[in-house]
Image 1 (cartoon, rainbow, N blue to C red):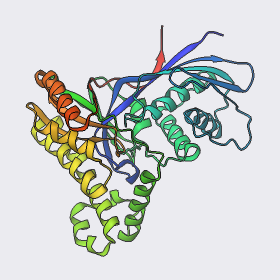
Image 2: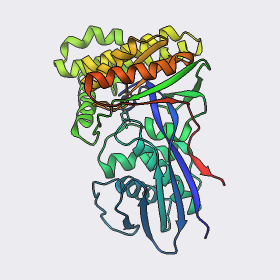
Image 3: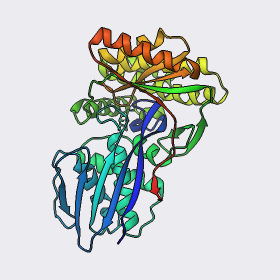
Length: 364
Ligand code: GLA
């Protein structure tokens, strides 16, 4: 049988950070960075994985009872295969050759790109057409259950629903969404601090637990269910750490919905202010930033033609997202890179990005 190719993009989140697992709003965009899986079906139930980025090939059987994670990149693929079958989509064995240019550990969702591209590949060659929202859920479950990272739905969802030149406002409770056009005269610029974030670490799951504790103490199902005004009246009853976490999340959910509105109205100044505010509460209340991210935002703030900047993704390293006037991007790039290198000794990577389309088969 002939090989087929499937691609899935990484993403950058414009605003709505650590809100997805609180049933809130997020506003990511898919990027041109992507993972491509070349797949050749086999007649047995063995899956082999070769990656251009990771040397060791991996092989597993779809019939393996009680499969255990290897704590390796292959877990994302094996987890997706397991969840697909558990959802009733019987698979067949296949040889997968994987290639990706999504920076790893940069907070641009290289893992979601791997899950979605392999999930799409494995299910399609086995003859299934899975509704995109369902596939996003399956990939999220793979990461929650098999990899052990209790992520929300944002990354897998945007990888499947990205639209060229648009960000997507997603309601993570209902999974309703709308595409929000990005004005032609601005660019999304992503600055990689080159400090690796390690999300598998317990910090992410600990934040999630704090949010669940906060919701319980506030008497609501999730932090989506309480407005900021009401929270302010009740917040003194909460233990300090839990209060801080909830305060960020509740403000961020409201901010994200409003940010989508002002972006649609073309009010980039206000949109940019929301980005800066988001960074501040992530840094001071949610405590997921780091010195390098804070520096990168500060350097951006000093440049001409910058509307807003903030850390993006899970945090503890990785990237900032910046909204920059198109004509100023080159200057921004050189000046921020030089100043960051001078202050830290680290050479950053700076990407001028276009919002791209969601995952699909690559038809040659
Ligand atoms: C990671 C997770 C997402 C989301 C972000 C923070 O990227 O995978 O689900 O929670 O962190 O907004």
